[in-house]
Length: 65
Image (cartoon, rainbow, N blue to C red; front, top):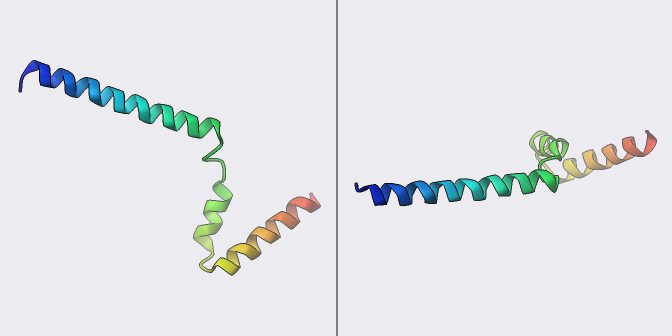
């Protein structure tokens, strides 16, 4: 491979990495990753009805606090 091709590959990979980093930081600033409780409930409950009941229970608990 020539040095020119390696240089282009390096710059393209750095550019794509920078775009990924910007997207990740944007997601953090917009709280895209803050809903861990919902993700865990989705794994625990198989049925949509069970998930809705768990959400209602959580809302009731928050209302009482």
